[in-house]
Structure formats: structure tokens, C-alpha cells
Image 1: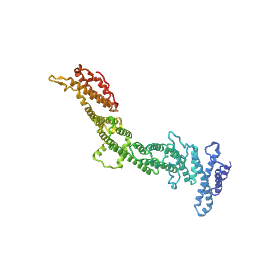
Image 2: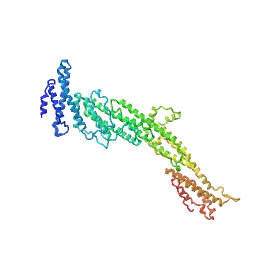
Image 3: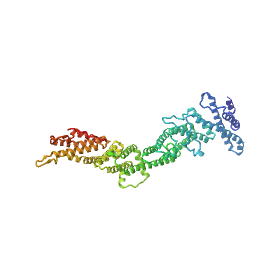
Image 4: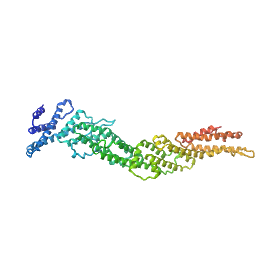
Length: 597
């Protein structure tokens, strides 16, 4: 080839004598490629000669760089030598400038010659490197790998890696490491934006986060958690590997490029976390904020990736964690205040479990899935906010974790709230039923959640169950005492012979029927969602009422056998009473079937 012959002609020229020939040959090569008469091809096997021309071009650049270094070394010996070589040095600088411009364009073409790496919109951006002016040698960019639903957009072949390495090495040897750095850094920032956009992250400006609805912000936080995980477990590793493969002989360049990009990404991720925490704190945000805290707690952001700037980033990550801790503690305070200040004056119908009781217990049950994290949060929060506590609280905190103390405080407030709401019922029986119903729901939730049970303790559960038994007895007393009075034999005798009064027996049966029917009509509407409690209540009522009723009927039925319309008085067989009791606490208005004994 013509190029090969020209190369052979200048091959053995000494550095000083052959500089003009080398420079002119390199300039001809630059002009040839710049005019489009030839292209740099690095992968097409049919263009193997052209590929060699790229290698020859890089070899010529290296020789010119070596000649420049040799002349610079010689000229440093005396001022007369400087004058003698100045023309050659100027020529080298001029030609190298043109060659580097061409290599820079070709390097950019190679990096961006990938249909999968198109630049995204500019709403998500990294700053340009701030320390370029002081870089001793320059660094290079990284190829992000995608999650399971995407592909690696920078699947460079070994041949392409080799070509990128050769171009980068030539530019660095010629003293153009900053230009090389800028090409790589620009491409990698664009590539990283593209990768993160595949997750849907980066489309929102930070100042707009505070204006978002919670539903939108919740989705953004979920995406942020995924992006942080993917960056730190996949992308950063891939990035570091790419830099090392392109700059194997320049570790400082590789490390600087990686650190610069990783630092920009991490700062952006931390900025998101801090902006999200600046939104209004409400209890519904707790669990997403806990996810963010866990993401930052794992030390996936910071020093493990960066040799330079690690302390600064660790400080920023710590600041973000502290802000999240403050927000989480405030959310628990909001929950306690909402329970304490809930002054609803309308009783929940039929003594059912109050919506607030359900909300609080389900909230705490879900919170316990983050038990270890919340214990750490409250421990850290206590260090951040040194608060005055009284002796009782201090002793309690020594015995229990900060999270356990919070739970007990919330339980106490919920108890007080349920007690206040029970006062809204005019029917004392319904009041105790409401207390029993809500108390049972709380105990079952605690016992059904291993973490919650562990934190509250067996003693707490036993105390609560003792309270439930007391409510049960109070309910029975208020509901059934007067009914059972009707079934006592005392007071049915009249006259000197203590003969049973038929009229009094009639009155007793009529009184029992009326009271039982009123209770049935009323308490069939009462609602117990816990089937075990429902069954226990029905069994306890049956064991209390049915034996007394059966005994009364067996003893005094004979006194009404001669009475017309006996079914007006003895309306129910004991088995009928048992069936009717099974209607209780179903939340439905049941009709009274009339049955003959």
C-alpha cells in the first residue's frame, strides 16, 4: 500500500533529522481521514487493511510524541538548542493538535456508535467534573448493566475495548489526557442517565418533589430504592471493570474517572433522599421512609466505592439518614397525637371494633416487619435528640428497646381512647361489650404477630386477658342478671300453705319472654368479627341461661297445664333458646321464630 511505503521511508529517520518527514506524513494521514477518503474501521473483517491503517496512524502518533519528547529533552540543555529545534517543536504541536482532534472525534464515534445508548432528556443531570484542571492524568467512563428487564447497553466486544485502549493510550502519551478524559466522562454521564431512565428515575426535578402527591412520591421512592440497589450492586462494579479494561496501564486515570462519576451519581441520589424527607411528614409515609433508611443503612452509598471523597459522601449519607430518623420519630409522635386528640362523639354502631383500633393495630403490625430497623432508628434518634425523661420512663427504657417503649406508649393511648369512646354508649352492657370487642381485637393482633408479641411480652398479654375477663363478667351482669331473676323460684308461693301462685308463674314466664326477646332483638345486631370470641360469648350465655330456664320450665310448667293458651307463657323450649342465642353477635337483625314446647 501507498501508506506502508511512506511509513517505511520515514521509519529509520532520526528524531531530529526526520521530524519534518514524520510530521508531514502524519498530517497527510489526518487529511486523508478528515476528507472522508478513508475511514477508521476497527471491527469489520473485510476492512482489515483499514483497521491496520488505524494502528499505523496510532503508531505514527506515538513516534511523533516520542520525537517531541526527545527534542524537548535536547532543547532543555541550552538556549541555542531551543532556537534550533523551535521550528520542529512548533510543527509537532500543530500536527499533533490536528491528529488529536481527529482521534477525539473517532473516540467519541466509537463510544456512541451504539443504538442502545441514546441521550435522555436533560431533567436528570450530573455536573461536569470539578477537578479536571488538577488531574495528573485523566480517567475514563463506565458501562451500566441493566436490571432483569433490560440489557447491558454497553456490551463492548474485546476488539472494541482494545481499540479504545489504543486510542486512549496514544492521546495520553501525546499529553492529551484531559481531552481523552472529557470524551469518556461526557459519554459515561450520558450513558448513566440513559440507564437510570430505564428505571423511570430522573424525570422529575428535585424542586418538584415537594409539590408531589403522596401517591406519586411513593412511586418515586420505590424507584429510588431500586436504582440505588442497582447502581451499587451492578452498575458501579461494571463501571470500574470497564475503566480498568480501557486504562490498564493508567490506574490513576481509571480510578479518577470512576470516582468522579460515582460521586456525582451518589450525590444526586442523596439529594433525592433529602428532598423527599423535606416533604410534609405524615404517618402513611413511615414505611417508604423506612425503606429509604434501610437502603442508606446498608452502606451501599459512600466509602466502599471511592478512595477519594469517601469521608465527604459518608457525611452526606449520614446527614440524610439523620433526617430520615427525625422524620420517622416525628411520624410516631403524630400517630400518638392523633390517638390522643381523637375526640369523636359518635359511638361506632353495635359495639363493633372501632376503625381507629383497626388502623393502629394494623399499622403497628406492619411496622413490626421493620422491627430491627425501628429499634436502630429510635436508638439513633435518642442519640440525636437528648431528651429529658422522668425516672419511670428511664427505667422502662433500660428494660426495653426504644421501639418497644413507643409501642407500649401507643397501646396505652389506644386503651385510653377506647375507654373514652365506651362512655358514649348509654347501654352499660353495650359499653362493656365494646370494650371487650376492641380489647380482644388488640390482644389477637399482638398474639398473631411474633415480633409484636415479643416486644409487648407475655405479662402484658396476661394482664390484657384478665381485663377482658372482667369486661365479660360486667357484660353478663348488665345483660342477664334481671333475666335470671325471673327464673328463680323465690316469691312464687302465696297464702298460708305456700301454694305456688299460677298468676305469678304466668307473670314470670311473660317477663322472661319479654326480656329475652328484647335482648335477642338488640344483641343479634351487635357485631363480633372474631369468631372465637363470638363462640365463647354464645357458649357462656347458653351455660348461664339455658340450665336456669330448663329447671324453671321443668319445675313450674305443671302449674299451667290446665291453662288455656299455655303457649302464650311457655313460648320456647330450652332447645329453642339455644338456637336463638346462636343469633347473637352476628351483626344482623334476627326475627324471633315462635315455637311450641
